[in-house]
Amino acid sequence: MSLINLFHDHLSERMRWIATALEATGFNTLIISSGEPFTYFADDQEAPFNTNPHFRHYCPLEGPHHVLKLQAGRKPLLIRYAPEDFWYEQLPLGNPFWLEMFDLVEAPTLDAVWEVVGKPNRGAYVGNELVRAAGAELVLNPASLGSYLDWGRALKTPYEVACTEEATVLGAKGHEAGRKAFLAGASELEIHYAFVQAVGCLDHELAFASIVALDEKSATLHYEKKRNFREGRVLLLDCGARHLGYPSDITRTHLKDSCDARFRALRDGMEKLELELCDEVVAGRPWGQVHHLAHLKIGALLREAGILKAEPEEAVAKGFTRPFFPHGLGHFLGIQVHDVAGKLASPDGTIQPPPAEHPYLRTTQTLAPGHLITVEPGLYFIPMLLRPFREGEHASRFDWKQIDELTPLGGIRIEDNVLVTEAGPRNLTRKHLPA
Ligand code: GLY
Ligand code: MN
Ligand code: MN
Image (cartoon, rainbow, N blue to C red):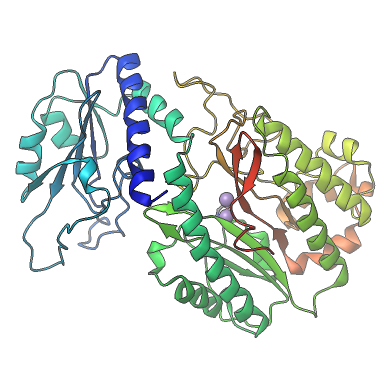
């Protein structure tokens, strides 16, 4: 199906959900603006602009101050902020594939934008242009409606999957370039540039700040610095690209031949168990169960390596695997990298919190067809998390000599993006980046 047809079905589906959401929460009109840019304190410099994800979900138009007016049974109205400007380039709209699905008004000033918005009866507003929205007598960011919107966003349409897949094609190119640069002896900075060049975008157009970590830095989960150090034996590369606003989120851990054979065995074990976990992305399964299974598998791998002296069930029950795998197994992926609704139990906003022993689990939902989730088990040597065990009553259940010898190599993470379908898991990443 062409992108235009996919988008048509996407927007129709979204508008049906909007009608349900407005009815359930007592509103008549939803106003969403693309957002106001953020200026640093005491400065005239702006942060790179990120369009309000709720806006992007309905309309691929980028840039600040545009407004959508959405009502049940009506064609969506797009009010495009289109100033004349000689400081910054203002590109003409042209004729993008999605345009015919909207009524369009072009407004040269903010006053003109909000004049078109008017003062809708029982209107809700989602965005950060609060002064303007209050002037339009809208209810600002109502939580009840927000939960409905988030719940709907967790169920991806074929258009969204196609966008993520295109972002995956680009991300895979970046990963291949990064892997080759690493094996040729590049630094973190050079690997980052190899990735960006292969994708063909600006840094801030990546899916998120790239994680390019050599050796011990790979044990810092969101390491963002880029060193000139070149002698890395381990590369953890967690980076993705975007297409029409939709990101891919991919991690690979590569090793040079000079890497310790025990670390290589752990990496190969993680590769195998990550693929097994991808097979568990099936409708009806609570994500917390898959996360628990990941701990059991990592416990078995650590047992086999001799790093833990406990059977997996006991290791997990006593928390021995947690310092090695301290984050959640995965998160919803959508128009945001860490997408919304992971902990929603229903559209009415009921939250299902993570269990106390897994506070960083971002997703507690039960998987359903249309959910798109990352599967990203990790195994790291993080001194601050291991210290309480080294000093605690269970110290003898760990091989501290081996842990100390492997700590300079950092850690391992492998991450794919997997769609839940009626027919089972669909791994969007491996098709384009097999290893
Ligand atoms: N790139 C951040 C994450 O994988 O969640
Ligand atoms: Mn990632
Ligand atoms: Mn991720």
